[in-house]
Image (cartoon, rainbow, N blue to C red; front, side, top):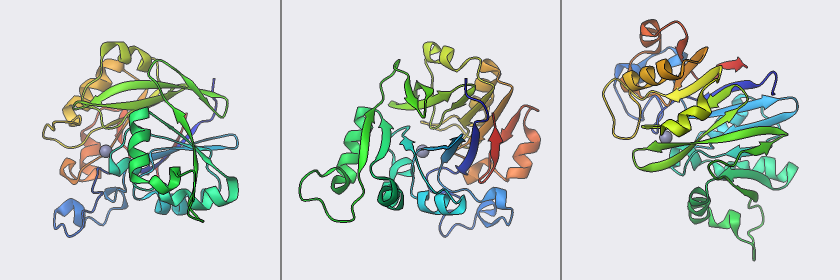
Length: 258
Ligand SMILES: [Zn+2]
């Protein structure tokens, strides 16, 4: 069982981030650093290992901000741009370490090959292009990262399959709208759960605040953190006050230890 897993929230915002470019919404204009949210990702660190879940358009800034010097791999939840667009910026890691392992559903790998063809090119490679080692993730097939077991959890983002991941007592879920009861069993017993809570109003492909709270009530972890947050959820400090004692809004640069 993993001890001292450190989880750093690299980004806690929805697809456009907060502030949204050009927006005059009060949350986008807030001076509170907790209201500034990069695209969603977490850094998992223990012993000498560093893994990220997702690699969105803010990946470079996130790696610089947290002074990450080596990266052991990227676990992908799904192929949407806010979770994948930063892949080219693994170059500094690739130059020092060689191929960077990626872990993803085969559909997601296919999408990455289409978007980043030069990274996956085998002949006539462009000098300076990074390269990855592909690890296909399949549901009901736990896999190892740095000698720790990861359990993939199948969830639905409207109709799109998305993977959540459980490592020891920590479960990370994003872009969830529904979960099959069989998958819910894999989450139970987690001490800490991170899950998406987009906004107050319902949304076709994300939990809103009420759905996220109902989910947490059902799974009943010691602690829960909400992520993938839209400016429409409101000011961090105001929403935080409304939540039950064991539930918090995540914010960028928060680190928790499990
Ligand atoms: Zn997303």
